[in-house]
Amino acid sequence: MTDTDAFEAQRPRLTRLAYRMLGSVAEAQDAVQDAWLRWRRAGDDIADPAAWLVRTTTRLCIDRMRAAKSQRDAYRGPWLPEPLIEDLATDPVERAEDVSVAFLLALERLSPLERAVFLLHDVFEEDYAEVAETLGKSEPAVRQLATRARAHVKETRPRFTVSQEDAAKLAAAFMVAAAQGDMSALSAMLAQDAVMVTDGGGKRKAALRPLIGREDIVRLMEGLAWRGADGQPLSFRSVRINGYPGLIMVREDGPMTVAFQPGEGGKLAGIYMVRNPDKLGHVG
Image 1 (tube, rainbow, N blue to C red):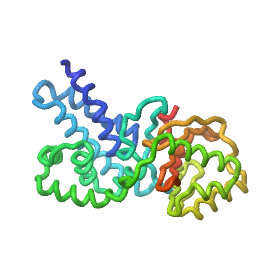
Image 2: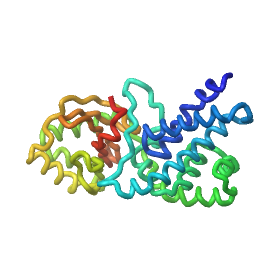
Image 3: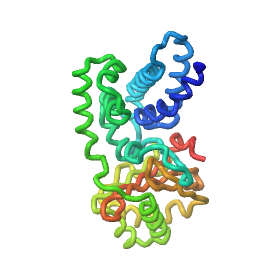
Image 4: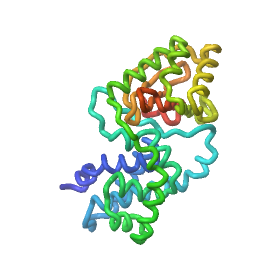
């Protein structure tokens, strides 16, 4: 097997790891490309290529996270991960719960090291000794980091399952009601504690705070309907976004994505809209 073949065999796993670390498709691809360049320079002295590549990619992602902290702190409005798009016609590449918006937002509350430990051990199933070697930490320190991280993210794990078909029907019904301005129908589809987050990054119109609760969401949508905000989209198509049913919509000012998080009792638990053009360069 050539060096290129050995690297390409690991690329999908490295990209999945980097996306969960960074919350950005473009940043994940760049981190993996940086790992490739280091791989080429390392020569033939690597005993375990897979472990070396995971270790290198993880450290590159941690460096990127630390360097980007000031930019994230200054971000205007709510932050959402760059949408991970999958076509409905294909089988899901990722487990929905491991790339869901709710899960990635929970990871954002972790330090870079906590995030790396949690992902490597709990998601990618590496043992603590391997994780410790990757991060240059002792095994007891890694176990402590994992315990803290796990406590932060455990509440985001789904307590129930919803079929893709049922979730897609619920999302479609919500969009029909929104287009018709049927606020009673919209309200009936939302969980009492539903959340709606719109990420414009200060570059597109978006709410400057997350909307919490059914009434808060409906009031915003009533206001948008009354003002005729944005009008009808020029085009749209159904896709899977971070494991959720979703839409790519094209408006006069460019594309946006809408992801619908199904909740308990056939209700919507979350609606996540990305309008920041910097996060939509990969959206066709």
